[in-house]
Image (cartoon, rainbow, N blue to C red; front, side, top):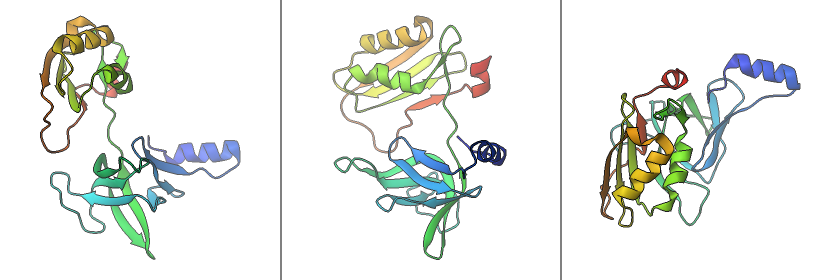
Length: 202
């Protein structure tokens, strides 16, 4: 979530203290912090941050805008390796100190149930925990129909359909495709939707 200047000023006035804007990911926790609007100082020496081209595994030059990518993380036994965050910005150094500029976070993915209620993707992830999946991709079309692909050997189409029917309602559960243990190369987008935040409020 973006902390706009107006809200920062109101918070500082209310609580009589400085307010810092923290850039953080669930996968690796805090990455950078901003005291002034739009300039985030990297604060994790154990986290390697790169800016990659959006469509290629190519590191961009300093000051060029691309996808923020991290290596490291909070689990030393399962570190992130060139994890593409889905967020965008540029990396610049000032007296040897690295800063992120022009930061823009990924847009939230909105899912809508058959009855029109909003479904959080965290609830979807929890519902899928019973399956031993190596990876998956869930997409919702504008007509609310779901399309799901997964890689794993122990999940059945019927079981996955049951989980989605309980969560979304059976009328919107469309294509379910369960493949073997092999997973194709490249980053998989877990969640995508043709709905926006505005649609979810209607």
